[in-house]
Image 1 (cartoon, rainbow, N blue to C red):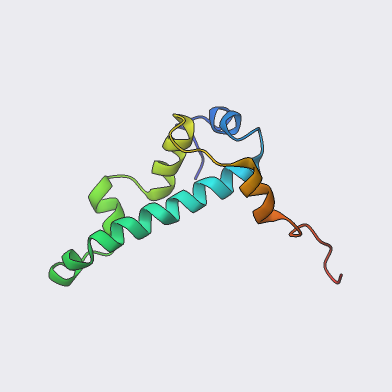
Image 2 (cartoon, helix red, strand yellow; image 1 turned 180 degrees about the horizontal axis):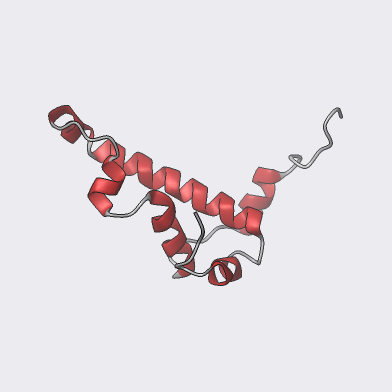
Length: 95
């Protein structure tokens, strides 16, 4: 799978050309979207047997939705919060 739309350059531009930041923001948002949609549709699954309610409801997978939000500027991040979240995660194995 590759990112074609939106273009990867546009996505990286929104995240300081940091691929790790892009992946972090997109995956967090995709999880949030998935949890929200699943939470709203628990009653539906009791009535219907649907394997992937997210795709059925939105027509897109959650990662595509998150990438679109990043590209069009509706999804952002707070640099200080990001820096704090990854603080001390870049340590050598065995330290």
